[in-house]
Image 1 (cartoon, rainbow, N blue to C red):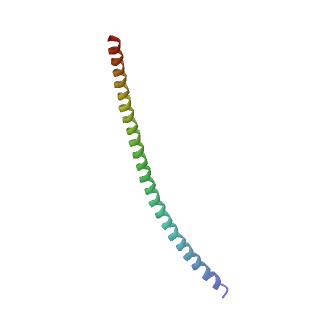
Image 2 (image 1 turned 90 degrees about the horizontal axis):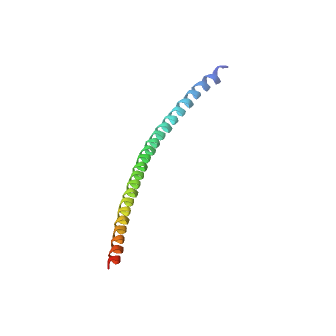
Length: 84
């Protein structure tokens, strides 16, 4: 009769450990899914940054080229006005 409480406690502790291990496994699986989503998000963010950089460079090229053409035209107009 003296061993009776000990005989009850050990199975209960094993059951608790088993339940805790199940919960930890679920948490690990959720964290893994979350990490995958974060990795995908980071990849998308990198892609968006690359697009923005490319767009900025293209805008600078177009604007810079446009400014050069205007400068050339202004010089031509000044030369024509001087000659007349």
